[in-house]
Image (cartoon, rainbow, N blue to C red; front, side, top):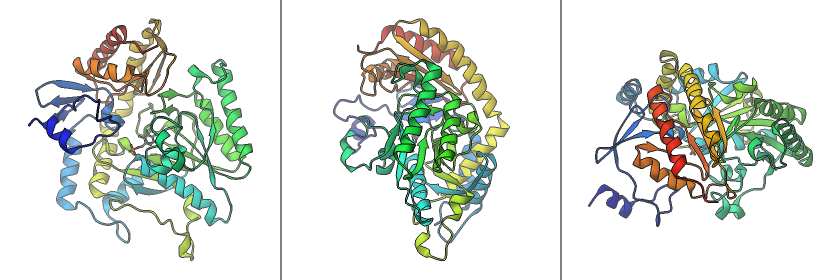
Length: 438
Ligand SMILES: *Cc1c(COP(=O)(O)O)cnc(C)c1O
């Protein structure tokens, strides 16, 4: 039996309609920006293996850090105990995170990093004896697949079956200027969006525990790139209405938008920040949620009831921490942020000309992410432009997974200029032969 057949008999894949999906592609090796199939083909990883990889696959330095840590200690519990990799990684993160972050709380993935943020914000107000119990999130938001993270995510095909089990959230406009809900031009759209957020803050009275955003780049909701002024405005409004700001940087953290953290585009610091995905360079699952001193201090008490009772079996896994540290080293040794900057220029030069195609509605580039949104009357994840592009690109040795009618290219930063140009050429060709359904 082939591996794909054995897979079919034993497994259930994420985000996959098992009845109709094509057979999964067996990968036996991954190196740099390439995945190597069992039958000897190579595929350029154009989406960083679901947005996690940054330095390339099987990087010798990260491999060595992982092996060295495994020889010392694989895992120990993190309640009542500590270890060097966890402490060093927290210290290093606090040194580079937006100013004001005071403590790091580890978890296992992006969704749990968000759950921790929501629970911290909620209990922060409870511990202070104030009743702020609702959240404000944005349209097109995606914050993960656990129940709390789904609640703050926008209603979508992902969340719809679960709608009755989700908690209610106030929803404000995002500055999706290409599809401005009110048909306004770019500058006005953004001001109007902030007006809408302010209206939600007023509507919630003093009940908003926090405003939660994906700064600068809303990912799974359609790769929406913001004007930095909107992000600055979110901080301003949170201050004005005395509520907390949570930045979900699970996707944007570690250089993806061209800055180490997307909050830097507007020079703002949130009260709570969520990290995962590239935290370990794409090697191991790990989440981290950091908060300011006031957040941390609200939990300090003689009353044990005010403790943050949250934790996961693998909290602060030493293997993940060790690879995370080595990944941060690489940022210095390989000039990683400069690479992202060069990649951004190349993506812009290569993708902007695609605006001329009738089928293309918008082109957006931020950091290491290039986005082409196709014109269609049926925008959204279920537009089958996505699976059709995925299949056609795979035939050419390129891994792409458009979000419905929104195609994006998000390779590991380790990609070379020639490889980037090749991928853009494939994308341009594909757009000439595959178009979204009307
Ligand atoms: C991917 C993602 C998450 C969820 O992370 P997982 O590790 O997949 O649970 C949360 N927020 C954002 C912005 C993401 O892109």
